Length: 178
Length: 175
Image (cartoon, rainbow over all chains, first blue to last red; front, side, top):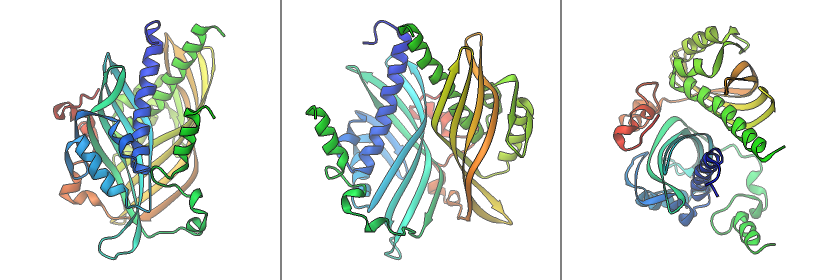
């Protein structure tokens, strides 16, 4: 596909890399372990928060953190990619929210965080994946919940985990040609 | 529109989009050189509190932001309209600012839009004029988590101390 026009190939590479970053966010938010793991090559190195080690081990840690959360959301923006053949480096911005339990008080709290992922990508067998990641924090804050009536909405109208969230039925439907 | 023109239009959009990402990187990391490079030398900027030439704007904003503890800008909803070698754009921004007010650390969350005019010269797109509009904003007291050494390890910093510039040593080659 990308053999004919190198300009088009560069655009396609940037889009594919951006979608890996979006899939990472979905993997965290929906506690979708397979989606999260698919973003990383098996030997990928990881340095984020208190974790230093292999990305595939971080996936297990992320699942342990994200799965119990009442709500979890990550947004990715400002994806700046530098391509070099089958290698690439990327900086993207993330904004994250965790509705979690404060360990001291036992009460719910909102954790807001923003920062950047500094990633090195490699393409193998035509597929871009992360080979090394550093997560950098630019802001964090904790606030008591202030929900008004969000949690009185029907459960199916509130973002859920894999495989209950509606995105999975939608994607299965698209794959079946519905 | 020919297939070649379609590809060129996508490339133009990507180049113009990356101007805003580089602008945010430059502001957040206090990179004067990078910030200067997203404007044409005869470009202008109107940020309300400051309006004037692009070089003077760079001086003003770098001076302002350097007095704050941390700055982070996200850009979304980028709508670009290209007409030959000129283009207009609307870019949403969300700014997270941490600074002290009377000795108390505060988080300032602000959201707005850039209204831009771009020009292509010798194949390169840059900002000719940027107007910054504000849509909403909140300021709340905070605690500076950076004082915790364990957290400070991966805290964002300014150029050249940010990991963006030293990630090569850690196995991630940055620009």
